[in-house]
Length: 227
Image (cartoon, rainbow, N blue to C red; front, side):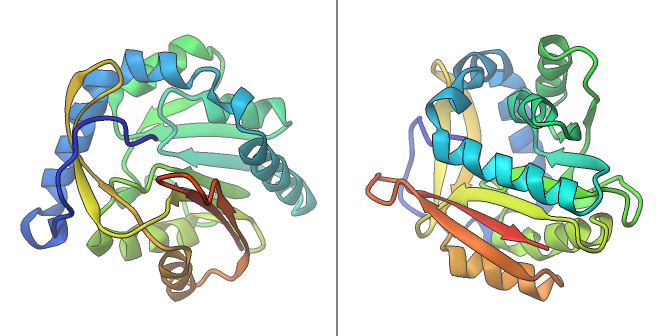
C-alpha cells in the first residue's frame, strides 16, 4: 500500500482509538477505493523486481518445507495472491474489505478469497505452510501487532515461512484521501525493521533475513523473512 493522499503530523493513534474504530475505518476506506486501488496495483509487481525476488524466495521456502496452502493476509485486490499461484503455490487470500474481496474474486476467478480480519484470524492451528502479510500491517496500530503476530504464529505450521512487508520510518500519519482522490480515514504507521523483528521474536518467530527496499526513497520499504 502506498501513502498517496493527504496527511497530517504524526499522532498517537493507539491512545485514542479502540480496535473496532480502526478496523471499521480501514474497512470502509478500502471498500470506497477498492476499484481504483485495484487499477493502480494490477501491474505493480512488473515494476518491482526486488519485491518479486522476495516472493520467489518465499515460494522456494514453502516448497522446501514440503508445501501446502499459503495465506495472503490483507490480500487487497488479489494481485500478489495470484502471483504466488503463478509461482506454484496453493495460495488463498483474506482481506478485511468485502469490496476488495469482490474485486479479487472478479479479477482472479478460481482463486479462493475470503473476508476476514488478521486480528481474529479464522484459520485452524498449524493449518498453513506459509503466510504473507505484504504491506497489510501498515494500518494496524502498535497495540494490536502482538495479537496479530500471535495469530500468525498459531496458524503457520512448524518450519513454514512468514514474509511481512511494511513502510520504514517513524510515527503515524492520517491518510484522508487516495487512489483517485476518494475519501479515506486510515492511519499509516511507519516502523523500523528492528521494531517489527522484536515483536515477531516475542510471538515465537525466528528472523532469518531482512531486506531494506528503496533506502533513498522518501518512504523506504522493508521485508522480513521468519520461521
